[in-house]
Length: 309
Image (cartoon, rainbow, N blue to C red):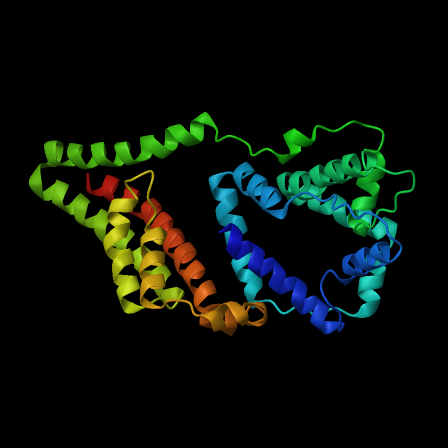
């Protein structure tokens, strides 16, 4: 999910850059080149993107993850059209601050990790950089936050660490499969063989077909779709295995990525067709859509089983 999110974000960035005939991150490249031309020491002060994305993902609850997942996937179908005047307008300090404030209202957890934490991290890295003369090149959206945190000492180890999973999350991860299993057993005892069999059939059909539909949406190989249908009823009851992992491995085995898939990755991610055509991104889509389908299937199957009981 993190790799797919990174590729989708890179796709959005490349689309914007293509509109204005520039290269993504060109301002940072130019800053490095200018620094090297005068013999300056270059220090990269932003936090590792993997740490930021992992902290973001782990901070979200289940439904927040589902919502974010849909928003990220739907962004594939959006073609941003911006004018240069709009870009320049967004650089104005008052408009930029209002924009960041709106993000804080609608997505407070994302604002905290993606912006506020990085402001603190960058401020501390700049503050502790060696040398008498320091030139810092940062994104305009980080300037207000860096200024506000400039005089405060920040714990970089804390900002670089990954949050541990909550006890409730671990409890639910193991409790849910046990609860579903107990529910099925109870169906056999209380309603007889017919009720228990119907409950098992509902679970297998709904979770399996939902996962299969997810693999189908990702245009997985027919055997990949079949593997997701067969795996989902079992993996949804196992806290350590996901149906998407099984279907992803099958897809990778049947349609092995080639060198050209890696070579064309940067251009393929610029279009929806490219995401589904490139064998690397297709594997990721198969994993994500299969897991999403299996998860939704669980929430449909449980009420059906309770109704049968």
